[in-house]
Image (cartoon, rainbow, N blue to C red; front, side, top):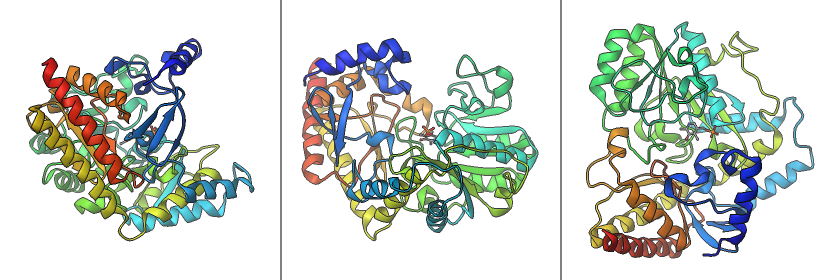
Length: 431
Ligand SMILES: *Cc1c(COP(=O)(O)O)cnc(C)c1O
């Protein structure tokens, strides 16, 4: 692996961009490396500025479910460019995307498109508060819902305590209404909702957690959230920015058979362009301006380029058999990783939901953020670096998911498993 140009670019970037990156985890600090700069991508590969090719399991953090530069997506973008890039006025494409999303996810009776997942969750929270007339919200430790103030409450603060700011710059008073509880803990959420359910505007949850590594919901967890919110007149928000159109065409809610009041989307529905969306019951969405009083706006929201990329992506992934083929690839990968680790005598916990997967360096079950933090981060760094050197591009953090795209084929998945087997053997040697 050569890295001269990436090193130079990173030095240059450090002078003009904080940390040299426009989103923190790209800096690769937690894995003890500097980032590789990407020059271009195609299919399941990214190519860096140094001339190296990698099999990509980041997929721009989730959107690239078809792989990079899928012909239909590129064609749709090129075609729409001839009409213009943004008008700040309604277009037919916005209706087309809205109708496709609503057809895929029936709990979303109406949707509003925004420009990022952060905007979607922030607006969904405002809507839930505006609709219920309540301030307090519940989230779960280790779930990430973008970087809006009220949602930036860090994990780890004990059970049912009031939120403390997870970042300088977030006033304590801004997060005083945010409660963060342990994920998958049915008893705790039941207790908290029994005590203060009438004061809770909403519960927001990643129905499959993908931002603490991959953590699937335990049996009954999502059901109890639905039950408790219904009982207390709180709203249930599924943050499906990552899981929407990823774990199934209908999102995690179709897999688990739960109908939330509001859902948030992003990533895949933008086909690689900046998009987010939130939507839900018609009576709730009717509170959004200009139909109702809850204000939310956006200069570039629903721009034709992003809409065209999203529509083209959804048209591809709604084809019969798309998800079963994709899940099979992901299963081949996770089964291969698990058995290679086992053969090398390395303790791992590998989990998968659809084409999202995660690998923790711990022998014990991972059900929540506390469990996830038991993973050996030093081993993860060695693993990350070893994989990168062997041409495998993983998220540079233990607390991120891995994504398989339809452009990954068995040959490259097997190459990934062989690379992992080598790295696991090396880790065992060092041990
Ligand atoms: C990525 C993500 C977000 C934030 O989306 P951005 O587009 O990065 O603002 C919110 N929620 C979840 C579950 C996500 O995975």
